[in-house]
Image (cartoon, rainbow, N blue to C red; front, top):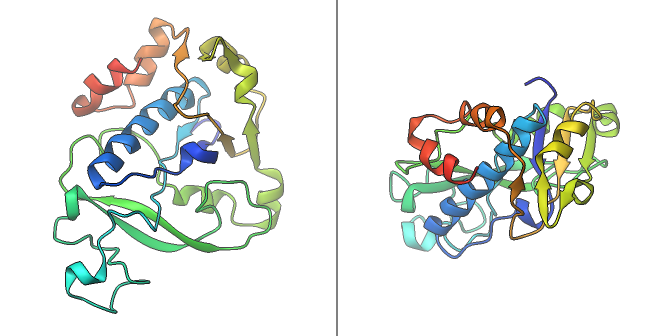
Length: 215
């Protein structure tokens, strides 16, 4: 990636849903939104994490493996195979599980989604959230390689302006650029034909229809 990565922060970074199907739908919606911004900023979009306490995460009680899961949940591999509703989660420790800038280096439980046979999750060229941990692994990097995009300054009439995004992409030299959109996600306006073509190059045929519908 030419300039680093673009990462969701704030409420949009946490996907709270009652079911795994709703999670997958929201997950892909936010990935498509972030991918469009990332292409205009010449960065790589980073996938959202999954809440470790999501109600759709399979419990020990349901699997029959009482006491063997992590904190009462059967995280990975999702159960029953190949994942409950097509998605399970992998638990670990990380600094950016809450998708917020973190200068202290403190770690906490975090989770990332892992998918079985479910449509639309493997056809975008995006990055796993662990890449943020790699980029910001040192105290020096956390102090110098993280910045936040002032999204409110790049909006016109409640929509993110593509021209304003292009104008600021050279302003940030940090490897990790956070963006904190409101919910619902604001539309993106002013994409040129070449912008649309550039975004579509980051999706395989399976996801082109959904991606084109969001452009």
